[in-house]
Length: 190
Length: 228
Image 1 (cartoon, each protein chain N blue to C red):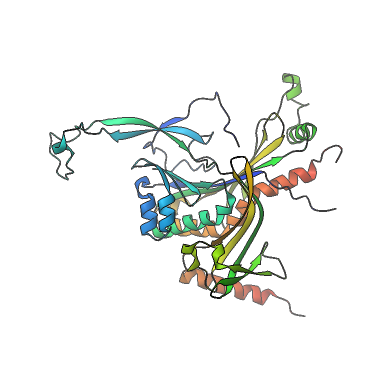
Image 2 (cartoon, chains in turn yellow, orange; image 1 turned 30 degrees about the horizontal axis):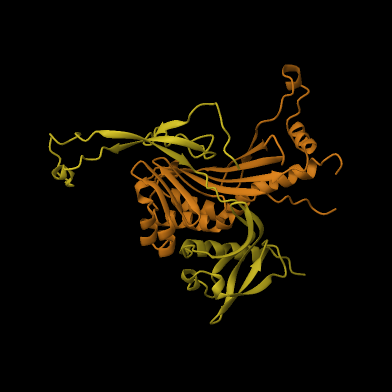
């Protein structure tokens, strides 16, 4: 998705211009309608070589030193875009139901209404070394299959991601229990 | 007749959180020390700038940009979508007193259209030209269409859908953007905002992320090529 050139104007703003933080609620764009723009960042000027004494970090503020380091404006290009094209073909969510020495088995579904659900066994080698300790019974995971790009070369990718969500809070557990209870009461058994 | 299920040729996903932030926090080292990313992830992270005013880093296939009043986390590889959600949830679980005013979950998807005729038909159907535009200009064309729809339920807000033609040469295509916007209640900005934000991110994630595909499915289902 190539960037669109625009003659609407150069989006430029001060990085610390936080006026309207509690008024502007627009979340459609980060800062710029074209999603690429430039921020003016105020950075303290670097000390000249040889001025070691002046570069010592101190918490003391003397009247002569206060404000004597001029802020140097620097224009920083900011883009929230991440160029890494990928075409998603299939996505399964699920959780680990058992783990062996060299593999683990997961129950997977594309949609929450899927029935029967699919079970698949994966080699532990399919996931990175750091993720292997996460593959324990009950761990949530996402399995995606898609096309990634390496320049103009298309490659098929299979990615298993073990989720890193914080544990449920007591409040969330209570709410889930209540929701399950209400659902259970709502079922009309024949 | 089989259901129409258009496959995007490219997708992006971004989340923008509006509030009050300290951009300098978001260095890969901080994520590592909080056990949010691995050593390897931290080593592979790319830091463009980390300062008190702006932070722009790439880690775990995600791009994080933060200034004092907003935080954005995005990816153009949607296989990282779950990672993006997890990282946001982890960050705001660790920073529970962050004042938050709004959050938008913003997927973008690009769909190819088979022919120029079908591409024009989509534009003319979404924005009819005869009544107004044809009388004003020669060959007017839709450049961008934005639809705003209110959203009710536990997290009331707005959904902004943008449809744009791309590009003006083969392969013909359309870009569908969605902004699943949630403005948090003003009285919760300093008390309970992150708790509500976390619930929003967990509960509304799936419908928000599927919005562009849902819109595209409806467009291709209702506006078919003339020979189709």
